Amino acid sequence: MTSTASILADVRPDGRDVYRFGDGDRISLRPGTGGWRAADLDDGEIRLLWDDGRYEIIEGVLTIMPAARFRGGSVVFNLTFLLRSYFAGRGIPAEFAGEVDIAVRPDRVLRADAAVVFGEDLPRFSRQTVPKPGTNWRDYSLSSPPSLVIESVSEGHREHDHRLKRQWYAEFGIPHYWIVDAYALTLDVLVLRDGAYVDDSINRTADSLNVASFAELNVNLNDLWPS
Image (cartoon, rainbow, N blue to C red):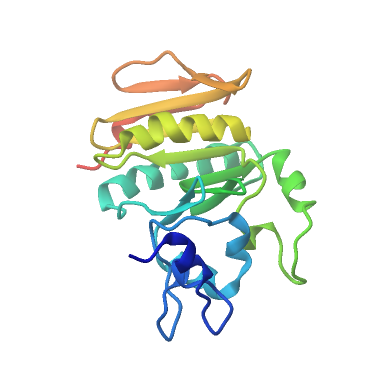
């Protein structure tokens, strides 16, 4: 039997290890292998393969996330549309992106369904130094906490969003975390206080809620759910 140590010692002609990248003519990313770091994504060839998949790095292990489904994606789209209108109506600068990699630790890179950077956080991101001329923070995994992260719960993976990512995003210092579940028809609006997330909704009913941290933001829940 070949030991992990001997596999790690095998090196491809391009200098990469066989254990994580295979021994074929072209490299491949091998889920379930360890030793992965956020810095690996600075390699352009690795980054292209990463972007083609739905990967995360969890405690240094390359992990595949479940495939996105239309139902889950539509509620994220509806939420971001609502937020765009809210920020635009108040003249608050905001930038949105979907499928965003967030390097919360060197051995932990999470893929968020959506991330928002708004208000005073935008200048903070603009001041970040980047390794390549002609690029900026938008061209890399986020290494600084965005203002808001939205996760859409996948069937069979509720614990990942409700417990693990909730803990990891709090440790990273992301101020706002929203968890939307298109199957259970629920929206958890959370705000970071004293290092932990607490409910940020007020006047919650079966059909709507107000967000305490966003003045006059009312979320009509029925507008979120697909038919």
